[in-house]
Image 1: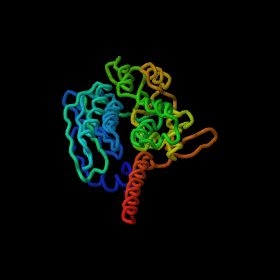
Image 2: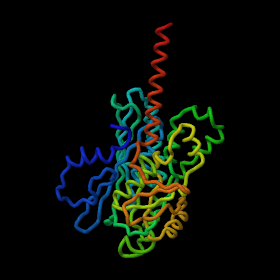
Image 3: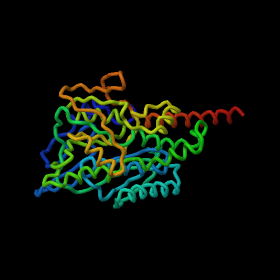
Image 4: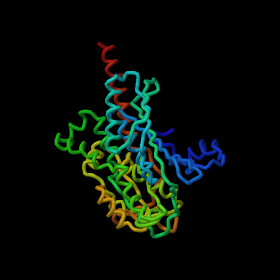
Length: 357
């Protein structure tokens, strides 16, 4: 199988056909993209949780796992209250690595107001990198996704590829310094505060609570999706598949940091297909009001496009018009795989040189 998330085809063929619906009162059904689970009680109140993971060679790997899990709940209008964590380490890891990962998780929880309720760690020969699994949980009234009407607007909140760029800087060591000056790299590394937090997205739902129904009031939110593996292009595909609709999106309006552009050019990566947790798509009847609320909360937001009655998924950039392709493998995953392969090749060359001597 390819790197990154399972393809839609593989999931439908090899997962969906093995699972059976037992009629339980669950809020979400399995899909190639759904990362939330939830159950409702007789009163209509619900308990939701979201699972996410991050893999890498950085102490901040756990930070991004927590960010992603809490962000998935926020996209459902749910404020995560706690998080459970399991971390896998390769056999060569040291206790200092464990300490650093735990500190990164605590940093994320402190920023998002979460309580760690469980933390388990282990070393495994199956882990070539640090892998952190995070499950965030919260309670709420029932929230669903509605079918959008043609003409509704799509808002993009956050910056494309920012998560991936930050994680590359965390893991690349001294290599970026061969191209960029220290001041550029320092400023790029400080951009983690531009990742959109769950609290900023939840500002949209707090505005809706002015009515008796959480989906009433202004602005009218049809659905929210967090961009993750595969970047903004994969998120657009997920949105269209979930809502069973077409759209037209203007790629030139997507917010992207110049630092991300330059780091991606250096490594020959596509930032629009790179991990983007901490950025969101919002489908709404009032993009202007949504953008106003998000900017007031300190998040960057722009109008990206519009929902169409037809099923065509059209992306434009200036005069260029094309149809959206199925999601490609995540560029961060590919970069990590190439880096691991290069490191193994380097070790093998060193061993051969020693034997020759």
